[in-house]
Amino acid sequence: GFPDTSGVQVQDVRRPPAAEQWQCGKARVMLRQSFNAKEIDVAKIMGRYDTNEDCRLEADEFLELLRDHDHWRQHISQQEVDMVIALADFDHDDCIEAEEVLYALKVWFAYVNMPRSVG
Image 1 (cartoon, rainbow, N blue to C red):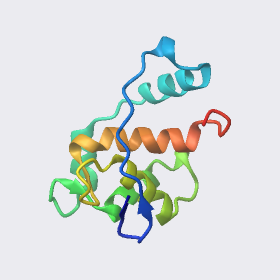
Image 2: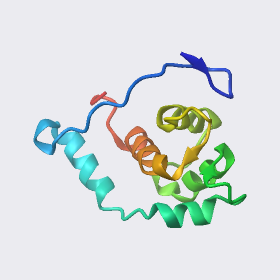
Image 3: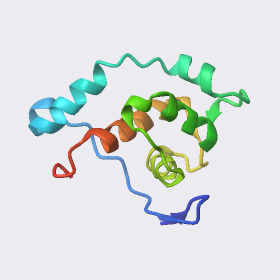
Image 4: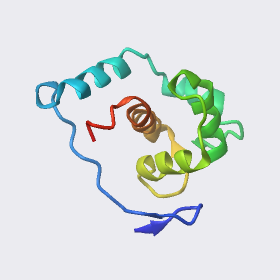
């Protein structure tokens, strides 16, 4: 693993391959369909939340994005933001670039909405 900015050890785990819907359990299919129903425009997200215009979302900018989608969760801790960044930050620069935004939002959506029993 490697330490992130909070000092937490994070495993460098490869992203699992995408699964076809027929390969997913019912809860995951419903979660995927629910997420896909939300039209997410990465360019608009970057334009709105990348306040310093460096083409990436630092933790504070990413936190604002998640807070604006508060229907996903009432309170978002810094530890949760760090967890999502650690999982979605493929180049390990502690930021979310445009090509990482959609995956980061999928991670957050699954974290908030997937029943704990699904795992």
